[in-house]
Image (cartoon, rainbow, N blue to C red; front, side, top):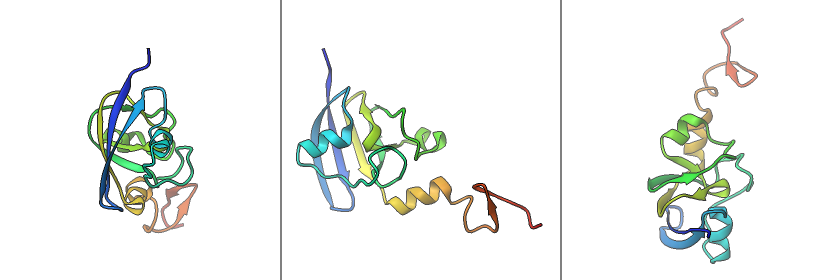
Amino acid sequence: MTKTYRVTINNRQKNTVETVEVPEDRYILNTAENQDVKPPFACRNGACTTCAVRVLKGDLYQPEAMGLSPELQSQGYALLCVSYPRSDLVVETQDEDEVYELQFGRYFGKGKVRFGFPIEDE
């Protein structure tokens, strides 16, 4: 039998708090949309940071979160489009630009970049 978890989404952009019931085998974003809750999103495939949240309480599983480094995931960041609940959750939406900067900022704005990594002056 599939377990269902309560996911509370604190949407900072809309200043709302909404709760949805999400089965453990369903993506949080799709399930939320089916319950008329509209968190921010863009690509729907775990490659960008538009649907990024910070997990405040609970556990989730996100094996397809290509848009977040393992380091950011270990700091509690997740992508709702490719996340499955593993317990009741409380999450907070993030500013996409802030998460992008955390993810990639160390490579950009610091001089020349080749193949995604800074290089020394040639």
